Length: 182
Image (cartoon, rainbow, N blue to C red; front, side):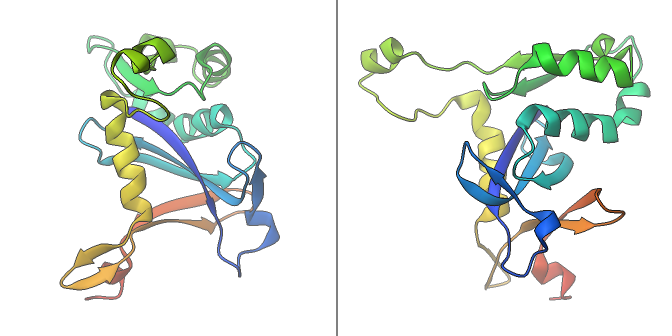
């Protein structure tokens, strides 16, 4: 499983309660937290205001889906959750253990490899260099934000945040053309 977040601008008619400012990305809007399997298919989704940290978003997405981990048999291997360097497992683990004390018998965190400057220079690369293991989640995040062609018509798949019982948010992954019955 891979988890990542993406801060994106909110629509102009969104309420003030649904917006926050992400200083890291300098974005006023929402933050989409996405957990995908090894093929990039959505496993869990969660939306927050953009000012929520990646760590807090991960804690929320896993705690909202804690029954999945509680029902996982102990004789199965641990689920490895691959995260980037924006996450801090040493802060996340104690918070998750307060929610479900046996959680670390079922999951483990792994920070994705990050090429060093020396490794980049040796390959003649600079700036952003894609990490193959993380590319799956990055592709899934891009799919959520990029127009696609379906039945010859351009559409934009989206993760939409809908207020349910404020301040909670329900996050839906949907394809607008499918909802419209086309």
